[in-house]
Image (cartoon, rainbow, N blue to C red):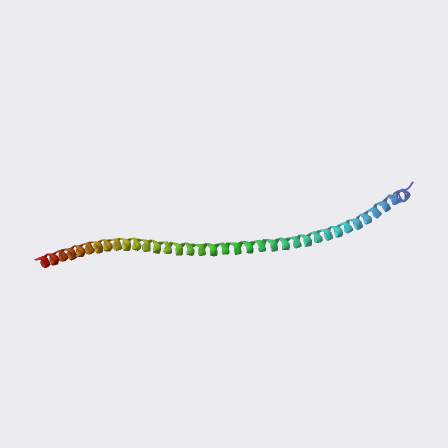
Length: 141
């Protein structure tokens, strides 16, 4: 057999296998491209869903952050109001303490004046009695 006939025999015997390989290559390329497209779609959907979740999460976080800030500012305001109230109560207590001290001083002064009035009254009573006795003595004499 000559070279040309050998090549032809090899070509005819291997051409179905070569056709199969070409068909398989084309089919695999098509399947691979479809899989790539499908994976890209899945990835895009996942990214979109991730973005939705991220936006929702950022909304929740920002809401919680604003609520925390509001809570803290309310707490600070209430604390400052409590401090003012405590200072007002302290000032009132100090005033009451001074009033109590003044009341005790006034009570002592009143007690002293009462004692002095009693002493003056007894002295005046004794003077009146002495005068009455002198008058009676003079009338007898």
